[in-house]
Image (cartoon, rainbow, N blue to C red; front, side, top):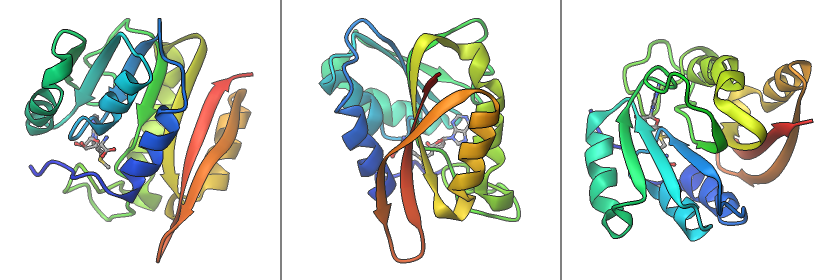
Length: 181
Ligand SMILES: C[S@@+](CC[C@H](N)C(=O)[O-])C[C@H]1O[C@@H](n2cnc3c(N)ncnc32)[C@H](O)[C@@H]1O
């Protein structure tokens, strides 16, 4: 399986992570890929980051790319939170596979129907894995219908803010900042 090379979506999320103060926060870089978002968390003073990916090769690359932080991260192979039973986080960043697709063949890109299969599973499981006063930064695309995602979150009593967006040729990217209301 290929490892996702950072793109516009990665950079948009990275910039938002760099604006957070993560000292004293327990952090999760979900779908770590190359480890770019974990690196941004260290820039924001994170003391420890859980780097999680379903793709073992991504974990190997992250380990290599984060060598300078070697005592400050753990690598976990996991399908979303499946290997993180009982773990709760103060800060989570997730740049999910969000491209609409008929099947999920490429796990770094394919998001299934409306590009929402992995996003929806993540949002369903989220409440079991956050501490009070948590912050989640989630990258979504207009291809996913960001308004529907925001309405779903608001129905679940989360507060959601679009903190950043970028228009590309065939879509617009958004970073959602999700908190407890
Ligand atoms: C769009 S890439 C983002 C990679 C990197 N975080 C970035 O911003 O460049 C999505 C990542 O999520 C991982 N992924 C896909 N489905 C996953 C799942 N169910 N659980 C954990 N990671 C998953 C992929 O392997 C891939 O590394």
